[in-house]
Length: 352
Image (tube, rainbow, N blue to C red; front, side):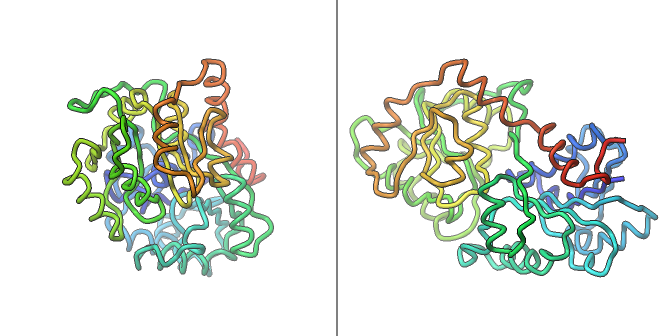
């Protein structure tokens, strides 16, 4: 039996890419290992609620999970934490623990995080880092940085995949948008580098396209700056902060003139990969992780590239050939991530 801790991943309706990751990976592992179960805060969004166990309170349910496992008489071969660190109450347990960490941001840029985020993803994570029997990163660049930050040489990549169903999901048009627009997707918070995006919006470059931003408000003064820019330049910046429909996001990916990500740091950048798998042209910051996951047709923006150069990239962006698009799509699948995870767990994770 495998157990997934998805309590924090399911505490709200509007999930981040990391939270979606945990849910999708659980479903993929459960397809291979039907004895797999998950503890969740809210089971409403699970089509198959078999072996999905709700807990009554978010942080109490997360912190006391080892007690709940023992109380129910469960004897897992491994407990998997794909979204958040394990509760410190797992420290004295003899359960086998597997943690998947999505980026090294909490250690490299902890001052940009709110207090609750630092406590959970830096302090608790650091406390538990040596306790995990299996510690994985989502990609090789992430695994490499985690090895340096945490001092563990055994951290390997496990993979990542799209957060929405790009093949069978039905599009949901978003009305009232310009015919041509640039799309940016991500929580509004400091590491996404929306400062540079606002500079693009505020520039008076001739022929500049409007930017559609999809992402819930996060933290930092950048939230107010984005809100103010929307009010000041509504024809240039449209913030869809409440968009939660995956079908609407799919429609935007497929209609955008190009996808733009100017992030300062990423663990994977799921929206970038999703948009590329929809055939969108991609313009992104020149980060090691973007070099690893971006499609061959992506244009990389350097720190010194001007607004003029970025707008020129966007205006001349063209969609990839079908052959290149299909080759890129084969790189990412949840079944592939599940297979790698089970292999990392060894005999305990092998199919029964």
